[in-house]
Length: 236
Image (cartoon, rainbow, N blue to C red; front, side, top):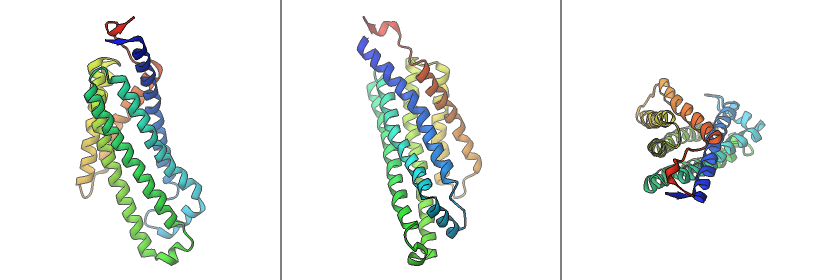
């Protein structure tokens, strides 16, 4: 049983989570969209020139990903408080998985900001040499891809638990919880397949579609409708 203050807190944090669901998706998509504007596959010189000419755009795209990591912490907190009465131990475990995801994302941003200074430094091509910069850029690309997939697995584990608690509690419609329970483990499968396969299929990217639909749907529901707390749980 929960008192009226706890109920109000649950509702507020659930709405916070709903907003952060949508904000994190927007921040991540914005960062990826901007990064496509200056990367020229197979052409190191042109890529560096574009990065130098559009340094603010490059820094903004990296910062967008970092903001997404910060907001993931707020999202995890909102979800944790919202479902903690259902099972505190599982809610904490899900929170920790999402925190690990956010930490890895922040570390990735640190690496990208640091390497940016190398790429656009004075006479970087002359000082470091094209071959060394190309190797560094290839390593950065591989590291970013690996970090994204590892973070996605951590996200998937936390998301699965949170959706399970929503399903068990009926705080949101069962159909939305069930969609999240289907979509979240699918992300783990896609990410592990990408990590393990030497040449992952482009079709794997379609595995992200269900979780995108689930998060947008649940985000809108939590933001607009909030959570449905059964009357028998309340103490007037």
